[in-house]
Image (tube, rainbow, N blue to C red; front, side):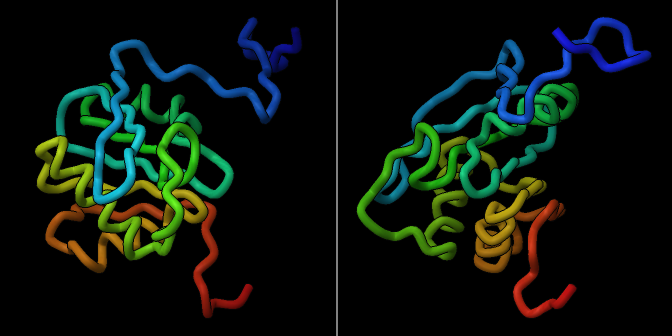
Length: 151
């Protein structure tokens, strides 16, 4: 197995490798208006919602979730139609998916959360933040294009 030079025996994983979620996280299906969201939760403290990008799942957040769970309640759903979340026939627009996030937080009895988003997760996070601004404490955007803004 390959290792990172000068960093001991830590293996170098291929880019497609999915690391397991940290021990202590639980998974559940949360029904929200026509979809069953597959959600990973763990840790204790202020809530942070991790929204993945296109072609990904909440599993992409495993390394970050492990760190954040030390002092946060971490919530990492699979977005509508992706991963282990159900695949309804319609309602894939970002506004509906923003409502999905609100319904998920309601089911988890969480009033407010930080958002950390990647790629299209940014669009879902933005839709949630616009519709429910009182529920967003911070909004982090990673690797995401902003429509209307050139290079």
